Length: 173
Ligand code: K1U
Ligand code: ZN
Image 1 (cartoon, protein in one colour):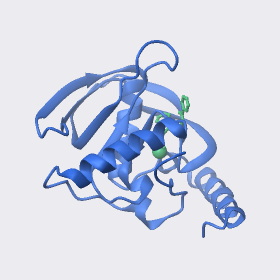
Image 2: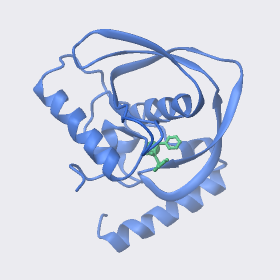
Image 3: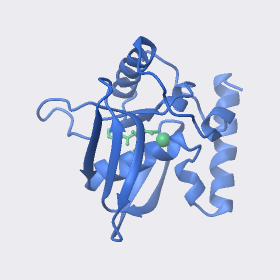
Image 4: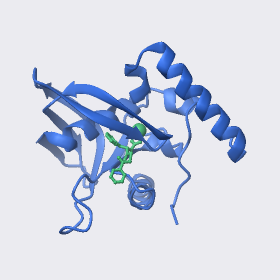
């Protein structure tokens, strides 16, 4: 069972630029734990706090191959992209807040990200491959941006209409 309900686009909370976390306390640790459980249950490879209605700069991700080796959950508090490669990569992206819609999105192939761990320590890591795509997708969520915002207006509108219909059917308006 997922711990928290994932919001479906359109929702004003998914368009919000979220403020940084000032104090990593029990509430943030509980949020991160719930988010990981929700992400694995979905299933997904990433999740940002606004997707579960929590307006905090927290994201979780795990792009390791399922069923092959141990899980590698990551929790990033106040993540910041400090460097991006000029080289680009295209991945077909999905979003747990935009179910069953996919599109090829071009982003920097490699990024360096700095964040706080749940212990309050600063961490810095270079990401490439799917990890780079995922961390950029999740940081976008913290800035109120969705992958459909990279698409042409007509395509974005079609997807948004489908999501409004889905929300009506689910009684989630
Ligand atoms: O942020 C989200 O909505 C989660 C999203 C992350 C993401 C997917 C693809 C490219 C970039 C970012 C997802 O996890 S969608 C589900 C998904 O990709 C997946 C699900 C099960 C197994 C493998 C992938
Ligand atoms: Zn998403």
